[in-house]
Image (cartoon, rainbow, N blue to C red; front, side):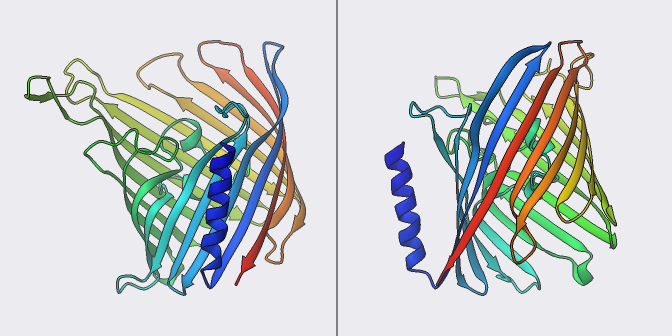
Length: 351
């Protein structure tokens, strides 16, 4: 593990030297988590929940890249030395590669343009709803085309992905590509609305029966995912609302009934001043709309305190405090968490 990390960092620095301009940055999340179920303490400890090591080379005014290592020392770690590392981003952006103004083509391990997962900035400590409830992975290997609509009216994205995500590269690829389309519209200042659609598959449609014959694969799964997003920001108050819908089918199994999963998430934010934000979030998750008593409700309340900002007024040192409680429709004991997190960032541009 340590050798792998050292080699990766040395390769990054060597790569940065041969480029005219490269931004090197890092972000670290130091977290304390206290979790109880029915009054019994389940977790009480500190962790480096996540660290990002980022390299952003600039080859020209129209060719830029991004390379991210995601490392951690927490319950997600599987290595015996107590740390883990994953490749999170590795892509190039080619601006105006085709003759269309304000457009770009992205190639590599890139963002998944679905719902709010591609621009989620962890206003709450918890994940984006699509990520938290297993709808899509935050990044995937593929090719995408993105751009701005005329007159600042919004943005659009279309992409083709492997469908494997980034955590287990090469382990879950079939013969079908996954497709995604996303659009955001800004009809008036302060109002953003949009939607996404994705087609995903798991396992090939046909398999060899062992005798050289191709037969229908009973493990074939097909998914249709939709997201609706609305954001309203006026003065110190903003509200982000999202609806997610996922339909899972098994086309080669006649007895299988499609399973529909839904999420409704609402997150209001009140900006007290340039340092303090008060956040709330309410998620309603239903893993199967045809089944009773299988869903959950999550309430989050928190405060973000920005200690230091950079020259662009972006937070580079801030504290997040969240209280989260999840209740279940089957009357299982509620899960309660208190999380306190220190996030800090720094960067340097090498020329």
